[in-house]
Image (cartoon, rainbow, N blue to C red; front, side, top):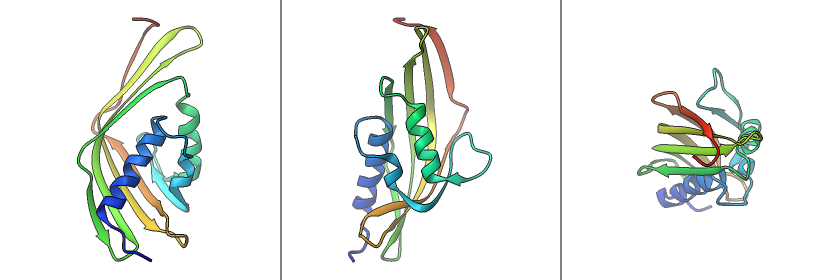
Length: 146
């Protein structure tokens, strides 16, 4: 199998955020290895990546407005089949609740570390992920249309 390249990892990181932001119809859970663990921004302990992916997909409805901006993605290659990606990001979601209330959640200073490994089929999969924020996300509520 081909050795992992930094550009291949950067492409997968961008695909991850495209899926999470609703710009891709790919399934988020397919980004992860079956045994992958994640630490999400609010988690007190690690959890199954597949479980976290399903929850994330449900938490961000298709009707939400989502924006993710990434900094430069630093990649460290570890052998032929593994690599680590580290970067910062900002993430904003705006949802309209059933009662018409607009809720905006803004994470301006997020940090991400994702470890990728090539699987037997040759695809890169996330085997470990840690997302955190330098400050708690800002939540703004207002009437729809404001």
